[in-house]
Length: 430
Image (cartoon, rainbow, N blue to C red; front, top):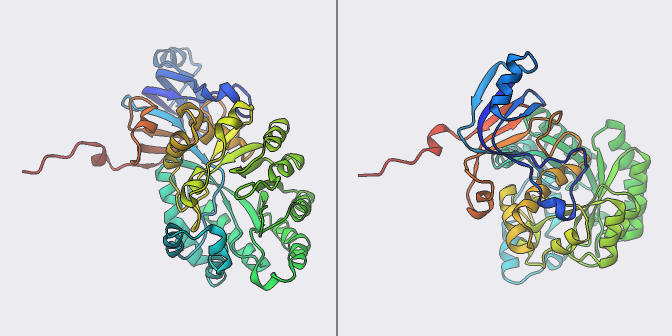
């Protein structure tokens, strides 16, 4: 069934005109239409002015079954969160307190915390327990504007537990209206049982885990945490090339804690995205530009770990396409709210609001190889969009710390809205 949306105060299309992503100055182009109208089914049928819609209807060239008055509010594409670890159980709040006291990420991991603390909890959890923990988190993400989310495994680190996580991700994708893209991250850390024989764990990844994941079709991507104390460049290259042989595309945790050269590796392997990049080198930036690999920046992690932010301005100046994501996880960034990430990107990474919105929509969709059908509001793409309780899209950044999303539409269907009384001023208490 098609719907005509009218009285759209601002329709922020992020129009790409067939381009896979925007880079450099083009990241400031939002394609805003004032007083617009849009006809949507599962995909977008038409965009223009309301009087044009009625003229086309009268000529028999456009039709719809219902009309929806947006009330002068702002519409933007749904946020695409292209890097999360959102399926887990357990809390690591005590680690947060330790970091505030001066402990580093590496010190906490060496003491048995960090990734391995969550691994132990996940290994003891059932699929039902994992789903029960993830479901409310994913709904909160949706309510704050995320319509597409990448979710990684990586908290099992055995064949059985990695498959368990990926099956849970698949079940959540079937249950929720959110679009979910699965990534295999068995190379998240070396588990303690392999600490003294890491080569055997890399063999396990290549000879058992990746074939098993591929056999069930559980992951579209394979990722590796390339970092000192985790996986070397050589190990990562072998793992990622094996995944490519099994039909998976690749992405890389790159240069998060040290300038290891992982961005260059990502570019050489044709990775769809290189993520984090806090310590990316000039050579790495040029390699990303030349390869077309998306630079997915995760300012929430730098904020939580009190690390220098990724060089967003340098990447944009070099014409590298930049995306944004939450990195939602229980340790280094427990945040599922993309609006918070937009604020951090502008305030602490120096991005302009227009650049940040492009990075969270079109370019983030490109980081998931979905920008041909998601990430902008254009005829033929999926009708995934947000109705914001705003008069101007810049207010999304200016007025921070609150949820501006009034409605979430996915595939032309409204899947969530703020209860009507929430958007009305409350009566004074006498």
